[in-house]
Image 1 (cartoon, rainbow, N blue to C red):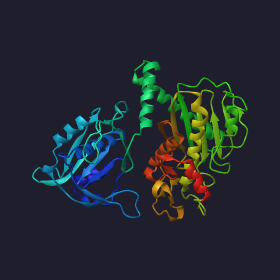
Image 2: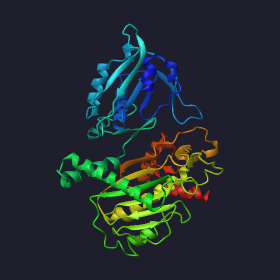
Image 3: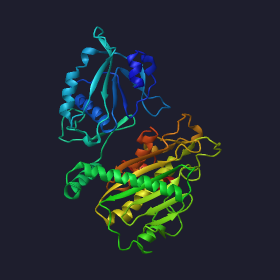
Image 4: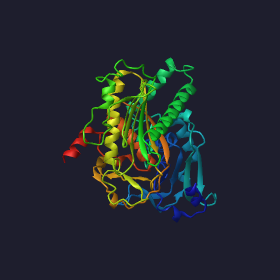
Length: 443
């Protein structure tokens, strides 16, 4: 709204320096609709915003990425000829290329005066109802403009457009087919939404229980959860020291002295039948129906290891992205190694933060370079960030590999800090790589 207000007032210089985000995209020139590839670009950009939370595409600003910046920013105002933007043609193309139709699309010229033949154009994509997602681009084009006949689901991630991978599409299809066959009201989507809401409520309850149990009332912490749908029937070896109880007490981890989910104490059987291992820095909790949670403090002793030397009171705590990536991967490895083989259920994964406004707040220091290989240490991190929302849950559907799940969960965490996913460390081929972690330790 601030951006549109600046355009309304014709204070274009105030827009210069604005960064592209997950809901703002700048274009120097209009889409050239006589080129198939440009039609596809238009559809891809609009669908990506619709699949996120809406946003705006601004035509009339050149962008650049400075050497010390992570994202493109508006660098120069360049009004475009109004006769190069045919709003009716834009709407027709979007109607043909995106399924289902994106509701409420609008376009505005700044200045609005029809007597002026040049200006800045804003294509506004309002937030879409959850029942309409995901929006699919009905054709994928190659660089030469030819059509291989494929479809795709674009997702806005920071200032870039990513694509929903095949494993994610498969998970969605599998979930839909299961609900068609077994869900309440069979194909009633409200049944699926009710399950999702109930799971989120359970995630919130589990976070509050962890907070009380670990006495983290004044401590920020991060939690990860996995929930099967349908719930598991309690495995026969659930309470066996050589079965799940033993795995909870001593999970198979990459490094015994690494940043893992292993808590050291024996597993305690709770009154509700769940298995719990808890120390002050870490918690691991598994219910008989498969609901699984791990949690750890977001402080300088674990998730912020090494990055907070000389940390002053009430100064934000910096999370170490390499530590977080290894911890998230270890959670996903337990899920894929111990739980998923026991059930063909569709698994949903949740990332929760709690108390991130406590003790001066939390910031995430990005790792730069290909796959986040170059670490940007806290003392060199000059960009100040305000504390993000103190409590949040982010949800994904589990895919076929632990590395891919870890990457997607990390992307959700990075999104909370408005950081691009290309700065996640230890990434190879779109996955957080165990081999990269071990190689990094050996170096």
